[in-house]
Every structure is written in C-alpha cells, then in structure tokens.
Image (tube, rainbow over all chains, first blue to last red; front, side, top):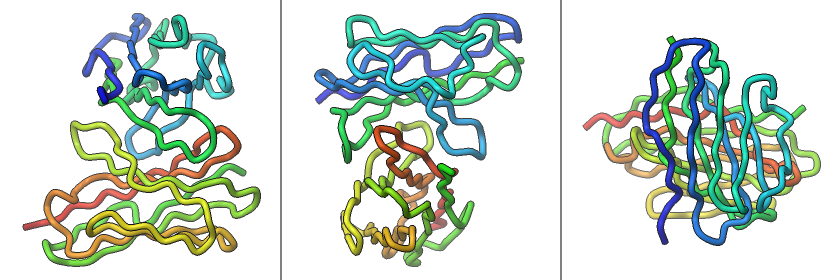
Length: 114
Length: 110
C-alpha cells in the first residue's frame, strides 16, 4: 500500500509569515493526526480527525494554527503568523482508527522559523 | 497526569552488543502501549502494539515486554547492527489518544 504523503519536506520562513503543510493519508484510513515534534521532546498531538470531524484539538494553538480535512481524505495544517517557537518537525499520521491501531507516519516537514 | 517517560535519553553501543531501553507510564486505565522506530530522514515505523500484561512480542532481533500492573515496557535489541541506529519512541494509549515519550536515541558503531 502507498504510504502517507506529506509536503513540503523542508520549509524556512521568517517569523510572522504564514506556512501550510499538506498530508494525504493511506487510502481507507479513517483517522488522521498532526503531531508537532520539537527537538528533544516526544511528538505532541496537535489535532486528530475521525473522517472529516475533529476528535481532539485540545493542544492546537488556535490563535495561530488551523487545520482542515477535506472530504475526509487530505488534510492541511496552517500556521499564521509563525513564531520562533514553532520551529519543529510536523508529522502527519493515519490509522484505521479504534484501539490498538498502529499509526502510519509520513516523512514529516521540518519547519525553521527565523 | 498523561506522562510517558523513556530512559536512557541516548545510548552509544558497539556493533554486536545487546541493549535495552525502558518506557514507564501510569498503569491505571491501560489500553495499549506502542513502540516506533524513527530513522533519520525517514518516517517513524510501528514496531509493536502491546495490550496484555506479560505480553512479549518479537520482530527479528528486536523484542519487547509489557508490565501493565507496574507501568513499564522494555525494548531489547540483540546483537545491535549499525542499521539499528534510530530514535525509539514509545506511546501509551489514553482512550482514543496516543501520548508519546521523548524517545531513546540509539547509535551503533561499527
């Protein structure tokens, strides 16, 4: 099966600029996740979708981050305006959903905010 | 508190050495424990999903055990090879949510 596709792989922007990341999950996977991984820390869940509905966005900084999942398939994550502390790897993952389902990750986007 | 701790933070071993890491987590309301391997420039890859106390899983030279009563899991690598160099992440399921530890970075020298 084709894996989770993410783009871009790398992005460098200045603070206060905006940026968008795109994710295409594995076909048929109902659940889609966006994680933020800051150097030295574990991945932190930003938002979780079940089909095209939001299951959990409790850790999403909603004043600057937004995400949507179009028709329950592709998803975009946007940051506007970016801050220095947003420098991180942004990982998209998908799964069949339900308990005990392993996550399938994309390669991630490494964002550097200068 | 949704806290998952991993130790050590990093590990350097020689090719052929066997090694192990620890993942500690709150034991109440346990659903499942996941292990992932994340190689540089690649995507994290699922190794194991473990649910039962006393569970032991194996994949090639890598194995894992689970103790849900005391809240820990061990990951073992037998005869480490340079290609085992990666960050090893564990994550505990809380309902429909996965909480990750910070990972153990393994470097295997040839």
